[in-house]
Amino acid sequence: MLELKDVNTFYGSIQALKSVSMSVQKGEIITLIGANGAGKSTTLMTISGIVRPASGVVAFEGQDLGALEPDQIVATGICQVPEGRRIFPYLTVQENLDLGAYLRRDNAEIHKDLDYVFTLFPILSQRRHQAGGTLSGGEQQMLAISRALMARPRLLLLDEPSLGLAPLIVQQIFEILTQINRENGTTIFLVEQNAYMALRIAHRGYVMENGVIVLADAASALLENDEVKSAYLGV
Ligand SMILES: Nc1ncnc2c1ncn2[C@@H]1O[C@H](COP(=O)(O)OP(=O)(O)OP(=O)(O)O)[C@@H](O)[C@H]1O
Ligand SMILES: [Mg+2]
Image 1: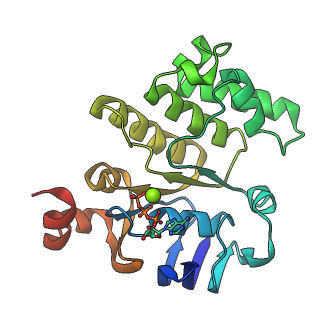
Image 2: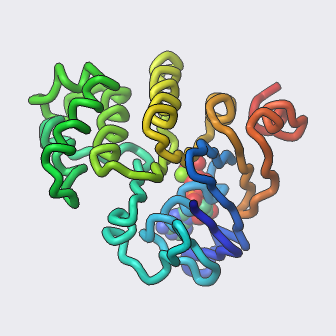
């Protein structure tokens, strides 16, 4: 479904991605784990067109994304939940969700999706007329995920959804990610520093160090891998 081939991305003279190749199959949950500054966010931003690679190819369902603007990339069915959530704090929960559907015209289906995100996260329904900025961190992450779902993406990119959240909330959010994947077949590309939680829900995983993919395997195998255990799982 998604293919990165020999992608090199720079910020000025700093090379953040070094010949990165990855593939994501339709219906998978894949995770990219790595330490601070490894290049995880850069990988997601290179896919969503916010950052342009100097060389290499990013292709989605056979289409080269290189010539498309970020909003055209969203229109192909890719939606990113950015690091730090970035909801609109002064808009209500409802308005944030409406903005997620801004490229759509299928109003009846938009209503169905709104009902669906409220069944996933009932707390958002209770808070629908409240300003986004008044929500707790966990609720804001739920809103950010829901806003992305309102675009009805076929590929959902998530940048560290667990960041700064209590373990119980992280567990709840990750369970809902598996539910979204299972119920809708939404393909999920999850970037995480919380390697244990990410590998627990993913089918496959990649490990990145200093802009290089150093390991790729089934998530269950990575959980048992000695290097991964000592470097990322703290065991
Ligand atoms: N806008 C920028 N300008 C210059 N260098 C940048 C910029 N953004 C990221 N970098 C550098 O690129 C490298 C990769 O950063 P990136 O944000 O992709 O890492 P990350 O794996 O997402 O880290 P974290 O876990 O801290 O979010 C780092 O060395 C970082 O300092
Ligand atoms: Mg990052």
